[in-house]
Image (cartoon, rainbow, N blue to C red; front, top):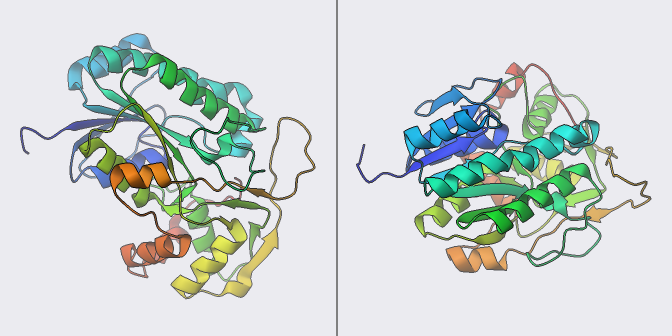
Length: 319
């Protein structure tokens, strides 16, 4: 290992996002990760249990490993889970930042927070970084509060406001939507997909590429949006998946998933398109379309090994 290799600490490494970022970044960085209740095995990544709400435990991590970067992947990213457990959503998406932010400052580690396009209501044609959060969901409000906390309390941070990312989970009993879709198609079952909520969709490795480039180019104290160039409903995404992976699109059915708002809403269609001009300029890249992202995924999975989706312990079509 090179002596000048940077260390990345991932808090919440057992989450879908945390484990996939760890797996992607391990080739260029020394990656370590913490989990709370769910151990995860990622070859080449040292993981260990930690309670980020225990100040002494949190300080011990930073004192022992002196990470150059700390990526906060703790939290609830499901609209339904946040609505069902409002206190937990606020605890993990916002309050959990307190000790990591304190010790990142003390031990000179740049803290990186992954936010979500759900901080917006989806009622505008597109959103920029300067647009004020107008979400009517607990996920959106707690993530927006996390953004605000870092901007006000950290002197060395990066915030990536990301569209939904897809891929495979390292914990088999917590399948992602991508695995839910694959499993249904492999089993020749009807797959019900929402047609009213349109998001950008990216292979999780694209977020890894963005995070890695930003770290290597020493970008700090910015909020940058990460999104595909276009948006699709989950129904449209599933149709595009079938086209590229050669599956039966007739198994994909239009549906309406629950969208749990804080106040009663009669809004039917929402579009969470985020402008990525700043990201592209800072990193000198061009973000892909959803179809381009899926083609990358097809090549990454070599158009096969989809049978791994059958090994998952259950499926969920919840947001």
